[in-house]
Length: 376
Image (tube, rainbow, N blue to C red):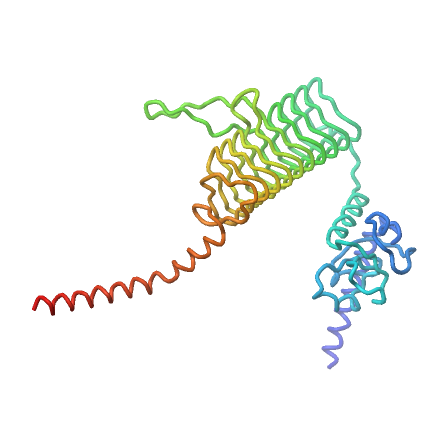
């Protein structure tokens, strides 16, 4: 028994030390609960003077942290959580014991609070590193941060509060908006235009040459890629994704406002992607494809060149779109991509193929027997 008691005391001590460290780390930022409630337009139930220093999940939260409840199956955790306050839906009763902030969408409100604390906790001290290379006629806004070994070539424009990470490359005459974050090792080629509040994760290449060749006598001759790329506001592009530039000088590969692109996605030349689309990892979009608004391309999906995908469509994982999809076609899947319901029927029939083949074989044998009897 003493051995187990010692282990328990040791674990309790370690937990307390972890809690104390987390709280010390977070006490850089203290917001009153009423301030958080006002920021998310919530209904405050309880003491609004409680100070909040951080944000955590409902099971991991500590004292002076705020958490949220979006899934009803975690309702029982409201009584056991150590959080000092909980963001909940309008349907949650007000007599749960802890201070609550009641909102229409708890998850969205929680994301907003996360952003508040992440912005508050940032210790960014904008500066131009002496190890960065800045070209001629570069226009920098206020509070621009350019980190070590970044290269900013001539005639570049960078807006206010933008971060250029270490070893990033910004080509001639590129334009980058305000509040944009370019992570380390991003390449932005010449004449590319990046909007406001854009996030480009490490390894992203914007403005690389499109895959264009003219084949003559079995030899592939490169077609010069003279166009550009335009990325509108609030777009996020994941690590190691590539956005190719358009072919012709007055054309652009275009990604419209609010679209989110995952890691390892290929967007070919002259593609146009609408607003608020979601494109998951390992997706490939061929040249000159036009995609509408609010389209989802799930992981490892692909689109054949020169097609149009209308707005409000969902292409499920590992699907290949080989023909145009009108607006609101709905969910499609398979190769070639077709209505998901139709694809499920085809899959069900495919599973029956062995049994069908066996029945055909048996029928062939019976026919052969009958023919032998008749012939005899």
